Length: 337
Ligand code: EPU
Figure 1 (tube, protein in one colour):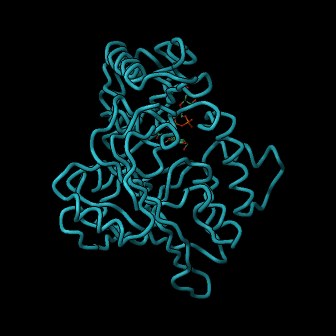
Figure 2 (cartoon, rainbow, N blue to C red):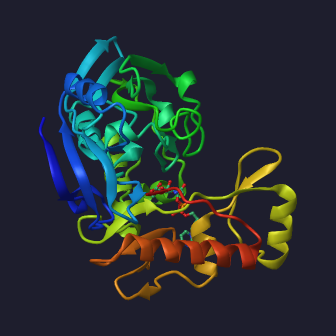
């Protein structure tokens, strides 16, 4: 595949930031990926997937490899289970729709998450009570230096809340090319405990939901709270929900008795960053052409032509303010480039 020069990355990132790539290569086969890695092994790379979890604060000097590998196939089938392989460049939601069309269950709670299949394991995407790791079997990845292909099992991936080995010790070393999922054909295991889903199903008077009903409910909830990147640039949750000690939580509760929380373990509690940001007065704040979404304070938005560096400055201001008011550090979920 030819290398293009000086191209705008605006169509390739959901924040809609107009940063440039000095050189850019669209990768549509694994052979081509290996070839490029071997040929340009001694220069820096930037691996671009769905562009849904990054904020570009500058132009990219490194060679951008756009992972555009396509294809979905059934690898194995038993009476009630199926193993499906999806290539890294498949759009995540298109993949969810494909599963629903075939009545394969397990991904319905993850409807409408922006991004691609290949980047989903990196941060163990999750929503409404389900995480990618719940349906993950393995993924294949190419080692950037050696171009060897390696299969990673669930254990190898070391999944945690919005975390995996690909964000930690193996960061920047592998390119995921495909992911295998185990899905149900019958006896679907539905996750309807998440408050908003329960409420949505009740509102529609659905007593025995199908996987399609759950997907529809999730889509309705997401559309009511989260901006559509096609209309307003964004990367979903900009920050991770902080996990703090019980002692720190008790202190917080003394000053803010209404603070929502989720127990993580006997010692740790997760606090919604969206609540902290709203409480700090940032929800719906607009600074010229960027700001904080008015329906979900965890989401920073580009109203058009904003610079990534401006949005990053806003993120730093939010982090500093949260630290000052609540003595809590919040980390970005989005990769700052
Ligand atoms: N909240 C506020 N104000 C806000 C936003 C939230 O007070 O502006 C409060 C809500 O009232 C609720 C709590 O915070 O009590 C949790 O809110 P919500 O259910 O919207 O979930 P979240 O913790 O803010 C997480 C994920 C989302 C995911 C939802 C649903 C993270 C960082 N974010 O958000 O993921 O869709 O749960 O499962 O864990 C994403 O990663 O891009 C993403 C959107």
